[in-house]
Structure formats: structure tokens, C-alpha cells
Amino acid sequence: MAQVDDVRPLGTELERSYEVYVRGRLKFRVGQMVYVAFSLDETVMGFAFPKEERAALVGGSPHKFQLPSEADMRFHWVHADLAALDPAEARELVVDAWRMVVPQKVARAYDLANPDGPGGPPTTKKS
Image 1 (tube, rainbow, N blue to C red):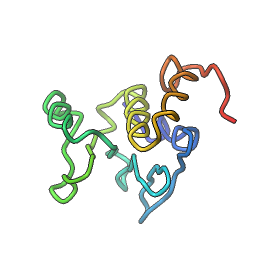
Image 2: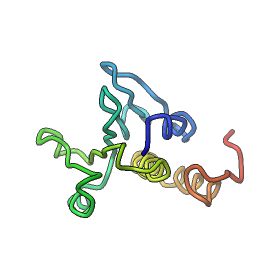
Image 3: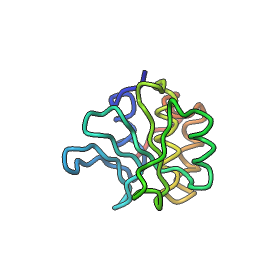
Image 4: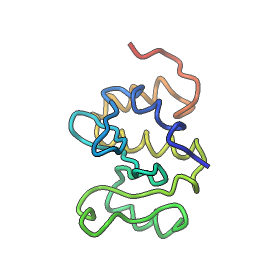
């Protein structure tokens, strides 16, 4: 079962990323672009995800993933039930969402420094 504290360090460790609170909700941003947001009760994590792939994600694991509200369908967004995710899976979703909002060279640098993925031992320190 994943919790906000399992992914929160990524919100400040990923390059160009920072956390903010908007109307009491924790969100991770790069610039002004939100790539992860949590519900007020921190049980649901919304995250950036390619529109063309979200039906397959939700259809393949409906107990974990849900489509956003009708008003938010125009965005690249999916919701996940944190209780249905393991911590490593939640961290991977955060990093994949972050990749959608940073330049490719920044994402490639992260991959080179973290060959074992999010939560794995980094090979270099972020400066």
C-alpha cells in the first residue's frame, strides 16, 4: 500500500520539480505545470499520463486506476488509488509523469543517474 510519504521526496528531488499546496492539496510542479496532485484526504493520486494510453491503463487495472472527471478529460491525466499501489509503483508513476513535463535531456540525465529507477541507488548526486 503506497502513501504520500512514499513519493513525497521525489517532489523535491527530481530536477526542476517542487511541491506546492493549492487549496490544501499537495501538488508537484515543474514551472507552472502540475504533474502530480493528491486528493485532500491523500488517498487518490492524480498524475500526468498520455491521453492515448489511459484507456488501456484504466481498463487493465480498474481497481487501481480511474479516469479523471469529465471536465478534466481534456488533460493528460489519470487517477490512482494509493492503497492499491505498492510504493515502488507509485514512485515510478511520479517519475513517468515528471518526464512528461521536463525536456528530454533532463529525463535522460535522470535515467543515467538512476539506472535502477526511482528509489534505486543513484550513481551521481544532483548538483
